[in-house]
Each structure stands twice: as structure tokens, then as C-alpha cells.
Length: 188
Image (cartoon, rainbow, N blue to C red; front, side):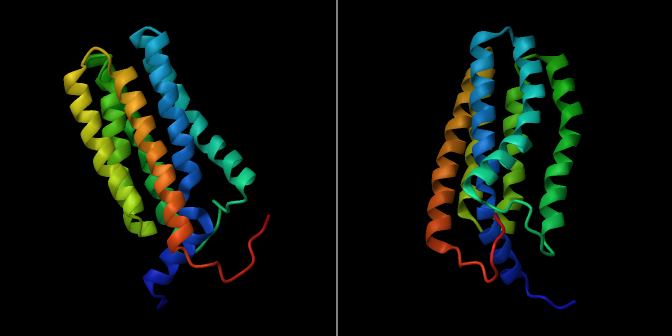
């Protein structure tokens, strides 16, 4: 098969709106982590943050349907995006080990790991926003975890929610200004 990569990336970015519904869902998730940190004990906030990851995919589906975005669009690059998300499941044991060492570590680890995985989406969608998110979330999670070691759920949670909200705005701008129109009709 000899298909050029750039058209496939553009097609996937256009149809999926560069994954903006996942970033919106992650914004809500991290806001929830911040709220859990403010309202619950650290161990309860940890469990809420673990169980809360279960809302990301369903929330993204709801948002995609609401805004008529085809997050299930398939081309030859789609499996790569799926695998990049599936591999995040391997992070969970790391989070439990981190929590056992110090219950305040998991938000830092989650922020760094989530930020780092955005590098792949920078390439997949040819999106500067994902590179900004990768750098901002990784660095701020490290720095805030170091500066506020006893309040990471609140500080890292709300910080990452803020970065991701900015990411939604930047992705919306990218989608409005740079995406080519899809060449085929898109199912509603």
C-alpha cells in the first residue's frame, strides 16, 4: 500500500476535529480531581481520581454526538490513535505503586503521563496544541508537585484542567483555521 501520510493525517484530523472532545472530557476529569482533592481525604481523592478516568470515553462520546463530530472515523492511522490510548491502561499499576509510596504522588504521575502521551497526538493531528499541552502539563505537574507536595490533587488537578481548557480553545481555533473540509459526507 502506497498512501501518503500527510493526507491521512489531515483526513483524520478533519473528521475527528483533532480529538477535541477527548480534551474537553479530560478538562472535566481534571476539574473533578481538583474538586475531589478539596473535598475528600487524600486516599479518597486518589480512589475518586482512579474511578473518574472511567468518565473520559463516555463523556467524549456524548460531546461528539452533541457537536456532530465523528470520533469513530476510520482510516489507516486510526489504529495508532486507539493503541496510544489503550497503552495508558498500563499506567494504572504505576499509580497504585505511587500512591502506596505517597498518596499525594498520583496526580503528579497522572499529569506527567497524560501530558507525555500528547506528543503522539501532536504528530498524528499535526497539531501544535498537543505539543503545548504535552510540555505544559508535564512541566506544571512536576513543578506543582514539588512546590505543593501536600496538596497535589487540588493544585495539579485545577492546573491541568486549566491547561486542557486552554487546549480546547486552541484546538477549536486550529480546527476553524487550518482543517480542510472533509471530501465525503459525514454521518450524523
